[in-house]
Image 1 (cartoon, rainbow, N blue to C red):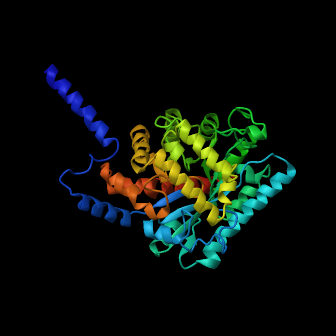
Image 2: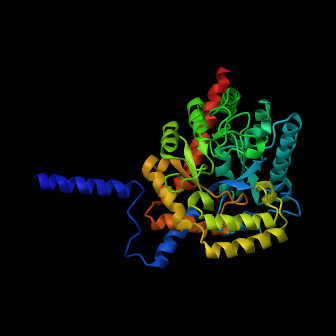
Image 3: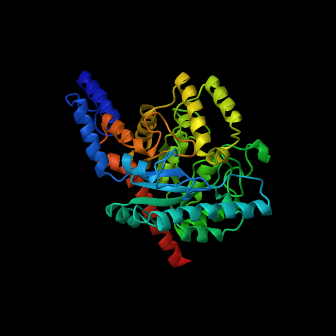
Length: 423
């Protein structure tokens, strides 16, 4: 009897480990062609949403035309080719010294990107892509056969100290805001303080008093609170202060890659308790630890191109980008990048820890993102293929590719409507 109970315990544990990340691995009787066909059918049926796609300041102009297949990782042809149905196009403004002039410039820079996204959807390609303001919009636009554009703000710095700007940005379509980016701001501490800004390890020891007001107003308006890029304490604070579920729009798992931008188990468990979702990000250094030798080679290449930050990278011409990519290809040949299998390892870990309902997918394309096998929107199918290989069901894949994010978005909207009734 004791031996039987021991065997039953072992079987129970084994079954729980398997079912924690969906069904058992791929059917060994299925051929490679059959597996690919199965994955293709699933990919064609599910709604795929990438929650983080960066854009340059000259986006939606002749110089950076999203309707043409070019050197950028995300454009409309690549989205169609890869079956990427929807993307959050990002209004990103980098952190600078907090002065009155810089607050105004940050606001103006934000408007430049808002205008570019609206220009793409309303003037340049209204027949191919449409801006969504709600989950219902996402489904309606997708069912019409068009691509879906959503808007996220990366770095709450764009409101400066003027909380009324949140309403303006919401009216323009912003549906999430990353509270901080590289460097502390008035809202929250960053996970990556900047010496050039005079940052210490922490400024507010998490979320500031002003940040609490910002989160409350975001809850009231229906803007998802994004905890990617902010410090661990700030993320735990935001989870505690928010009346609505939160997202981590582009973060991965610290247990598999110890990087300040990734989330540790405590953060992930807190996010689950909040009802939120972590959008696992295909950003090479967050997926696979980079060796010192590769870091040195990459730093040398960036110095040669005068790349001192993400904005300089985003402002590169097509010719510069092509030359830079060639240099990176040489480096990656010597020190291979993370691949789709490595990426899905992060998904597996998060699913086992916090459950399928709280895990999503993002790329950070055109902002440094990209791994071998998913280096642009045209390769999006490869992620679904690997998920099928791991034994995830179509329902689970649909959840991770967009269902979980839409659930959070709907709940944020519901809570906002309730708060507005009582305010």
